Image (tube, rainbow, N blue to C red; front, top):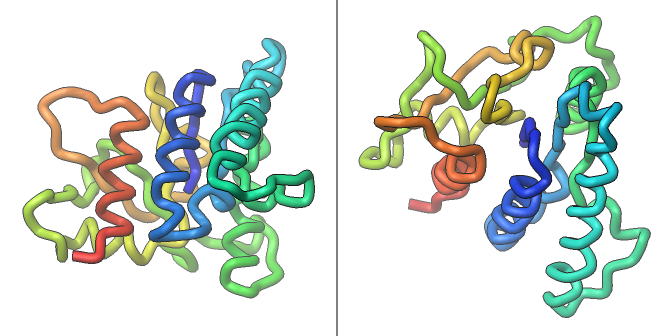
Length: 190
């Protein structure tokens, strides 16, 4: 799961959402890659986002009765700037598939990389059909990418996509709501 996030407040809500799905898929939080805009590097955005993760770690994870230590970093998301995202994504995809390749020798066709965005070729998620093509694609995806609320999926990441899913709506949906809808489709047992 890749979430392009501009606001620390959204990160708090996304961490909580991922935590709610821990019983359905233990790897949601640890596989979450949080992408920040490159301009954020100058503004100290990473420190704000790291503060949100530290707060989540210290309050929510400790409330669950689990002792959280520095060695438990593998259960938390990865923070990075846009420019660093593509190499890490390729690396994670190859680790998942047991391959040792770099992004220069990879092709998106080797993996199912889905962008959640409006696109002319997007599959439409239907709340009435739990065996829809969109839901099946999401359930079998190697990676699911959520773009920024303001500008969508960054071009360097968009170039990796080979499929798109859109959520039918009369108006735009914020990032956290979109992730909630998509997670429900991905992890549904119906």
